[in-house]
Length: 499
Image (cartoon, rainbow, N blue to C red; front, side, top):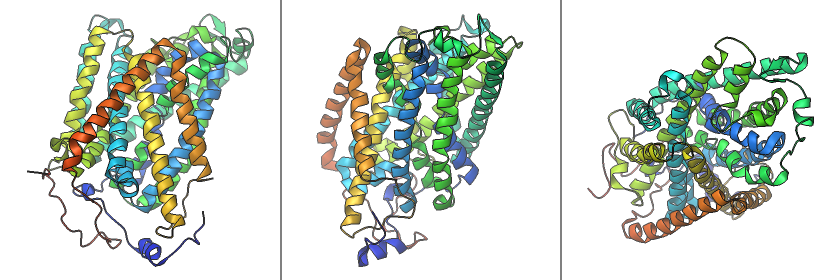
């Protein structure tokens, strides 16, 4: 598409904006450094710090290829979202964009898929925190569910304070994660070059060549693990949500998004390759972070303990982001009438506390799972979250296609920052995500996950028929100037639709 697609209405759009009424009441308190670190933190989380260990044990070094492929498609999705977000930053993000280009039904599907994704991810994150604490003997006697509950309560309180507090916490969480991965990569490269002993092995290419090569158990296990890899990239879309509360989003977003592809290949693919080189794939486990496995094996006193603290902050970071994003998504749905009215409420700090409380309440299901199925809780919720992520990303790509259709009709103008290769890359990405979801049919656990997702879809369809009668109609305001002046019917920060 080119900028030649213009018309009087499209030209008018370039100098004015629409505003989603659900964006009313938010504070623009996220600074450029917050946005940069949210983009980093969103793409580095529990999926790498904990999930990579179990996936390496099953798939071997070939897992790095799965990370690379999924990373490319994650980047394309974020570029599509970035194009929409730069055009009109919104805390409702892809829900608001779906509302504008697909209507309320599209916003409903997109919002609830995203809510499924992150509410289940919250369960995965509190499970990860509990697993991490059991690394230390002092906590092994503490029930896993109790640790999970404490983690949920801590981050819940943090999210209620203010968006500035959230941004500051996420900045430092992400900084710690990045510093840890860089330290791991430097020490791992040193170990490989020198052939240093790591546990019962010596770092080097032999850990791959002498243990079955890239695919020790065949290609099929790596293919089956792809959904878990998609889960690892869940959170990359967070930068779109944060754009609605960012200063100078148009300047900050392109830099944050463009650097994402570098981070994906350096941090994710690079880390997995190094993990495969420093230890045999069978040395890793789903019950321990691969970073802890490595640092515990190189002989540096207390290195494992230090890294365990770091991966603990990674899980808390992801949990922090989950409550932040779902609270705002639920509010966007609630203002439209397609979500619980309580979710529309905001406190004096401009925080949508209603949605955050609802997500935290659902997080208690994860606490129960940690009490009933402590050994399997993480894998169960990770797979279900992976489907939710793939569904959310697909909805973003479909929304972007609807936007491109309006561009072609001369009703919209594409910003200078664009998704490369669109619309063809949209279609290729959609096919890829469909194949990834269907790959679950190859395993018993995957079939159970798909069965659970079918139940979710049925519930969503039933929910639509329940709420469609109270949908508030078109929430997109008439044309506003670039300063957002003359916004009609702006909601009060504590107003609830229908009350």
